[in-house]
View: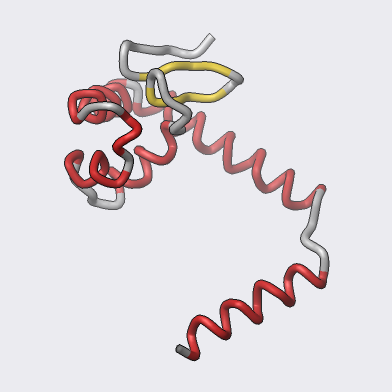
Length: 105
């Protein structure tokens, strides 16, 4: 079983901010992209409190190797899923059309 705290849960083989459906990876990438705890909480008020954001950040910093290994494994799983279930040509074309339309505005 993975390490947890009062700020971070392990369930369904994944880390979550305790008591939420917000994955720890969301907070991790936001924080290490330079966003402040306050800014993260403003974007994700479902976390519940600024204290919980700081607690999750402290957890990530205290268990850095474990969290990095977990996120690397999540990326590997995502790549496997993408290979197993590729997008249809129609969907790819629709996404390209939407992207083009958005940049033309």
